Length: 337
Image (cartoon, rainbow, N blue to C red; front, side, top):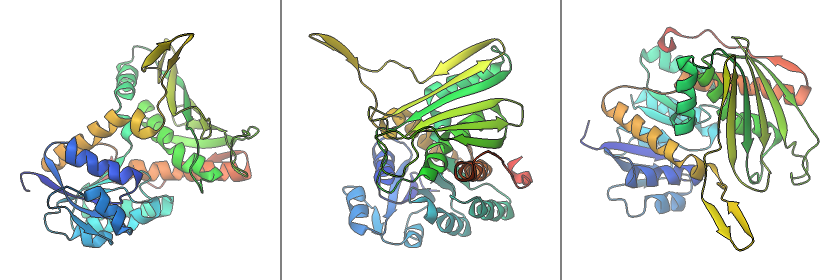
């Protein structure tokens, strides 16, 4: 491996371009070797000014570009399976933004392909595991000071939904982060999902069921509820309260910039996830680069991505058909034990 890890970034949209910037300007021990996007002008803008970064329309061309030793996938979810399998074929370590693969069947194929290799190559981009507040909450729960966790109360609010955002995407895109965070914080699989549909907000686009209230059951008998509201209009807010036998703990209320002027005071609210979780993304990518250079794969893996997709699919079935839907998971391969 070279002195600086050469990374190909697949996808140069909002998330991909931010990762190119992060790799080039924030993370150490790495360089951007290639950027791929079907819109080569967009890829070119993302790679502008980065010495030695080649631009490609096709993902596989970027994987085969000179100097590429690892891959960061930030393309749309439906393109992930093909890109992951191509990276596996080349033995390239991968950091794949969520979802691993939107459909659990595709995620299962990726899991089976990695298991055949006999070693982990992929990490999934569930960045909340690297957020300072979530890390403190995880440490507190694992330490046992508050006793056994009984419930998690979660909120997930966005300013507005992008064009084409569907009711199902509130579950399989937005709430996918809460799915992984709950599994990680509690150390338990989610076993059933119930999605309740309050009266839609007048700010929601026509036909969009927003907000939604999602209830998860866990293998250890805990309950997790999530209020997801993607057209709140005022900001990006993510919070979680753990209710345990001997106390509670809540995150998501760290003080932001407070501005006082004549006649009033207001506190700034983050407008999107790249602002709220900037530090988490930085820590996540730096940890991935460090472990990759050391020949290891750490962090959430393909099993976690598969489990999140399976739980989200059960949630969508509950949203569309009503009622409680059990989560069905394939046997867990020894590689992910």
